[in-house]
Image 1 (cartoon, rainbow, N blue to C red):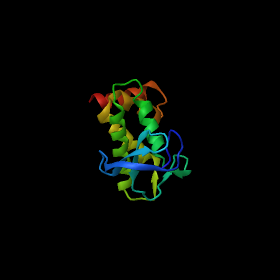
Image 2 (image 1 turned 120 degrees about the vertical axis):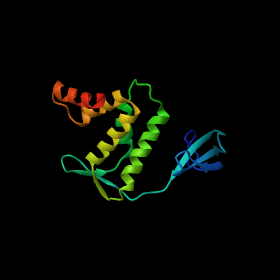
Image 3 (image 1 turned 90 degrees about the vertical axis):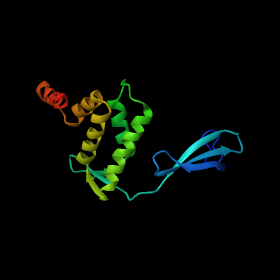
Length: 149
């Protein structure tokens, strides 16, 4: 593993243990050249997943896109970064547990909405307004009424 500080191509593992999510390994590493320490996570490589978008184009599943959507929805909300990571992990687990090679983006969007609804209602409404493409205030109010009921 290459050192992120000095780019030395050879580092050594100091400690290995299961990560909090139980599906990856957390490794503490040290660079012999600069002496800095850093953490890496090792996950099982999954089958490639293709996402079918609304316009029927296809692209490779990208965890960062899901994470960015959740982070944007939670912007300036009292939501911890660790909680966001747990939500993204749960969404990813749901998506990959379907064991499909192709999945509609709507399935991912609904999983995000379910998780955000439980995490933070304001973040949920923010995400829903973009995801559901609210055209006017009445559709926005309809979504708010669903939360209040």
